[in-house]
Each structure stands twice: as C-alpha cells, then as structure tokens.
Amino acid sequence: MKKFLNSIKSVNSNKIINIIAAVCACVLIISCFCAFMPINGEQKIYSDIIRLHILANSDSEEDQNLKLEVRDYILGDIANLTKDSTNVSDAAEKIQAGIKDIENKIEDFIIQKGYNYNVTATLSKEIYPEKTYTDENGEDFLFPSGEYNSLRIFIGAGKGKNWWCVLFPPLCLAGSKVEDELGVAGYTNDQIQILKKDKSSKYVIRFKILEVIEGLFK
Image 1 (tube, rainbow, N blue to C red):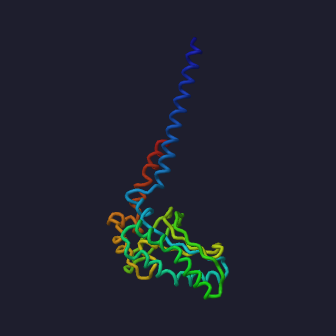
Image 2 (image 1 turned 180 degrees about the horizontal axis):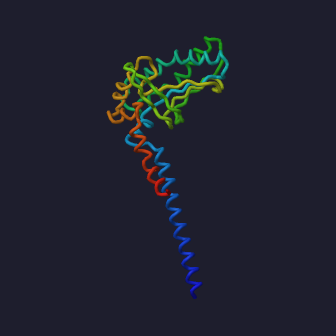
Image 3 (image 1 turned 90 degrees about the horizontal axis):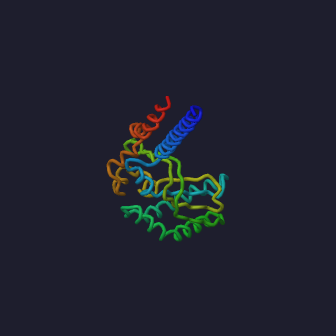
C-alpha cells in the first residue's frame, strides 16, 4: 500500500513538473513573440508608410545605371501623386490609380535609352531592412525592419540589385525635412520620437520581461 501511495505521489509530482515546464515554455514563447511586436505606437510606423522599391533587370553595370536613371526620371512624378495626401490611404489610392501611367512612362523612357524591357509596378506588402534618414540638422531617424506597404517597380526580369526609400511621407527627394513630413502625415510627437535613432530606453523596456523570465531559471 505504501509503495502504491508513493507511486501515485511520484506520478503527481511528475505531472506538476511537466505542467509548470509547459506553462513556463508558453510564457517564454509569448514573451519572445511580443518582444518583436510593435509597441508604444510603433505599429503606425509600419501601417502608415509607403516604401518605394525599384529593382534592376540584372546586376550588369548597364542595368544598374539604367535603374538609377529610371529612379531620377520617375521619382518626381510619383512624389507628385502623393504630395497633397495627409494619410496613407489617400496616398495609396492615388498611387494605385496612377500605376499604369507610371509603367507606361518608364517603358517609354527605357526605349529612349535603347532598351526593350517590360516594366511592372505593384502596390503590396513587402519586408524591408531598417533604413536611416538624416535630416538637415544632422538628426537621424531610423525606420525599423518590417513589413510595409510598398510600390515595387520591376525593370525587365527584376533580378538585379535594388534601390528603395520612403515614398510616403515623402522622404525620397533630397532636402526632405523628416520630422516635418512625418507631422504632415499625421504622426504625433511621441511617434516621431520612436523613429529617432537613440531608442535605447525603449529597447530596455521591450526586453525587460525576458530578463525577468531568465531570472526564474537561475
């Protein structure tokens, strides 16, 4: 009888240990997931920005030079589409409405340059690496890596190195005042502060929960 009771206790102890381990694992997984989720208004950075992405036909010197010429040629036209927009939805609608015109203009330009590449433009979601913009006062604004609305322009096969920038708010053009453009696009002062490059205090908050969980296992 005593052996039987001890065996029950042993089984119950093992179950309790397994349950505790499972709960801890779930907490850790959720915490790790949350650590990479936008916080304190960061979601607006992703949802209220449109990036511009121009992909060259190939990595040949000629195709790469053509990509930059296309960028210089079409950038002003694209920026004009969104210059009076005060929110991302309006900007996206204007871009979508003008997308065929963008394709046609670039194709005509490419033909004039002696090439015969098709051009395809799409407005969709795309993953971007982080990008830093420096304003006229020398202050850096860091746009984090993540999934953004994106106007992609494929030249020919679109297999070459690419060029990108922030199309809305309009930061592609030289001399853009980052903080001013963000304000026009509806960003609050707190959200603008998130983009400023010194974000050490935010990252301390973000990963504090992981330190707490780590301490439980010491």
